[in-house]
Amino acid sequence: MLGTILITIAFVAGTVALALASYFGMRALVNSDVGSDSRDLAGSVIFRVSALHGLILALVFAQEMVGYQKLEIYSVEEATAIADLYNDISRYGAPARVEVQQALTDYVRVVVDEEWALLGAEKRLTSKGWQLREKIYLAILDLEPTTPRQTDLRRHMVEKAQKIAELRQDRENMALHPVSMMFWCAAVLGVVLVTIPYFIFAPTPLNVALLGVYGAFTGVVMLFIYAFSNPYSPPGDVRPAAFERLLETEIGQPPIP
Image (cartoon, rainbow, N blue to C red; front, side):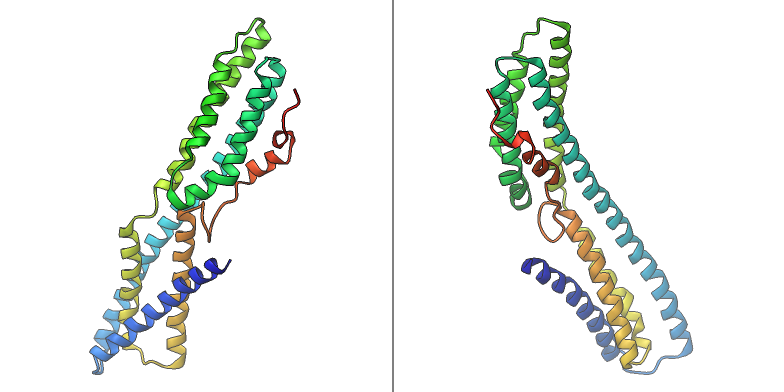
């Protein structure tokens, strides 16, 4: 919680300070009065630069928001595949049922207790998670169906085990693609270039406050983009709610022999 507050303060205070520093720095550099032509030109520059800056922020914000929502969808799909496997192996009635169900339980615990935090800190999945998934997959492949019912269940379980591997990779890919440094350079430069032309206006308390409001709002937008870019860590971390919910069901308990 403290870390989130500090990050928020850093973004908001940083953009406000940058906006005001650009404004007062330009006024100190150009300390003579400006004519009406310069005011008109400055107004035109402000409009165009602010429009481009706003468009850049909006596009990246939307892109990161889509990725943020995809992670929630991937998590639900993976948890659903796990639940289907857990129930289908019971319907199949194989001697390996207990082994597969225990591996699924262990897998969910690894995702919740270890893997989620590791994706946020080191941008990678755990080898333990892959080993458990492989154990489940091989156990299902070794099944020898003797009835049409078992044949259909085995095919369905193989598909779900393959789906888990795909969704695991999708979760890791979400962590491996942060926002480009080029965007952050453009965002920071945009704050400077938008506020510099305002030097034509006198530094009245109201004008300074309005520039502060602009800087603060821009900082909030950039904070959201930063938060969405790493959905496994604060301040915008997505909780593994779908997996946590599985642990509240029978999947979170030792399988009954």
